[in-house]
Amino acid sequence: MSGNVRLARRARGERPYFFDDPNVDRVVAMVMGLAGEVAVMRERLDTVERLLEKAGTLRRRDIDAYEPGRKVAAARAAWRETFLGEVLRIVETELEALEQGPDPAYDTAIELVEKR
Image (tube, rainbow, N blue to C red):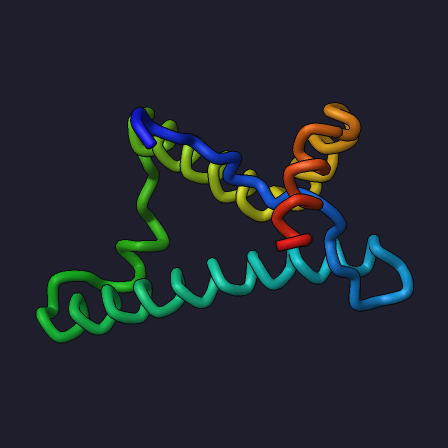
């Protein structure tokens, strides 16, 4: 095959549901995504605090008194937007799927692959 092939990065087809109410599944998926992010952030923060404490370079009151400048505030806002996008990705994906409607060509391709 020549040329680059780009496949859609979103899963298609029916989403598996584990609870009677699919909205519960959506909330659980969002919470688990958030929990994963918080766990990673907590480990990194713990590492930074331990290294700073060991080096004796920072006091907790310095952290409490810190006020970010405009560039830092803008960087934090950009990160927060990306983070919330990840947490809410399941909702966004489902809304996009509803807006796009059914894709007969995709469905036909899936059927052909499944028959093999």
